[in-house]
Image (cartoon, rainbow, N blue to C red; front, side):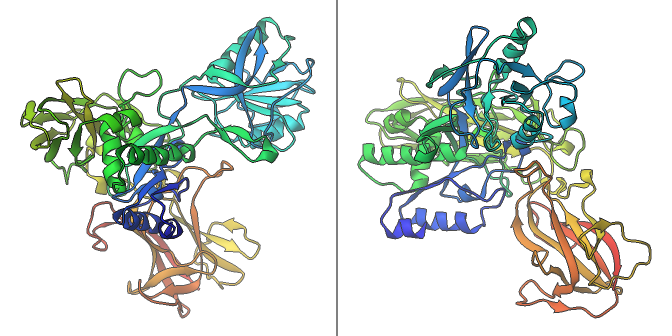
Length: 609
């Protein structure tokens, strides 16, 4: 980033990120510094949509950066196959990386459960008694229990010649796959169609295309399922705006074919970076990144989820899908470019916005309110957020100090917005609501809009630690690394056996720590480890559900008797033999950080060594 600034670049594309966070992180802070010096920064919003709320990525969280969400491409250039007289597009796995060309005798075999439903193929036992040698197996692409590599390994072991994976809930997913094994991702409806044909004609041949062609894609033109949800740790409205990032045909290493179809906010972000460059070119000027961001947010297309009649949450699509032509031709703007209503305790009931007429003629604007889906991630009283939300028709209301306003050219008008939280919705379940304030010019010019977001309830009461899965907990690790319960009245020697603390964050926390107290309740310091450092971190994001291998994500802290005595200490110290109390403490959101009143605290009990 510094090199880009020093080399005179105008725009930085950040197709990378470190996951859930606060705006106080190195990449976001540097991005803001560079933006204030005239640069424009577009950063990927993250691909953790399957993990649910609070997951928008760190690199775009700056006040002046553009955090980019993804929409699926409406059309795609795909390889295909014909089965039962119908052509279906597919994407080869990254490990295969080329067209699939199997012989005609490699017919289709759907892998079915006992109830006739398509299996996810995650259990090798599903192939027991099923002859798939030399065949193409079809499985469900649900990633709850395993990923493509796991189900592919089971198919390979059973002798399959190839695999097709039905994307769920829709679209064409990207697959990692297995080396030297033909694997392709197909649409959900295609999977249903294949099973229907197979039931009528089990021996029907699959004909594989020799070249790619255009297809209208299931789920296209809507927010990508993989695109991460906001909000950030301060309940700020992120991501900012969306761009095409699902099923994008672009260049690829020549050794792997030169072109490939990939998906991710890493594909959407260059669209925004390029859009910023187009705007600079069209306007023959180089506004700062946050100035351009406002224009793109003001003119974005507010969109719906696939097959939905309501607007998608602003925590998913930001201001909407980027529209470069409208951004270049608009003659109006709204400041600020978003509204953070925060939670019920800190609720911003009234907000002032500025509407500017940048055109050459007097314009009359009409204000309107477009509500969006309210998302409930804690509907079942769960501590760790659900992976998919309950969508509720509970909307905020907005009143305008003026429903219409006439503004001369080059002038502005200040409008007061009066918000009311949704009347329905359980505040104890922390539903996140959102919507859009729209100003429509009377003379047919480009309407402009801004998103707002808010949380009903007290965000300080949102659970931080995943108690649903039994976190936090303390166990015994022996010399071989095996984990077991700590026996009653046990004394650790810290060589052959050590206590280990396990934690799993389901929400952001401004301050996380594992604290050590002596038997007189005197604070001795923060638990220090030999391998993972000190159990102390500030501005910490939540942990996603599973890693790329489908394993649960959590943290472990193996104690060797050392502590960091204070936050500012430069080195840990070794405690003397004795009995100590271990406490896990996480600061609640939007609190001042007074210990212990502003913390979620778990006393894990005593350790003697």
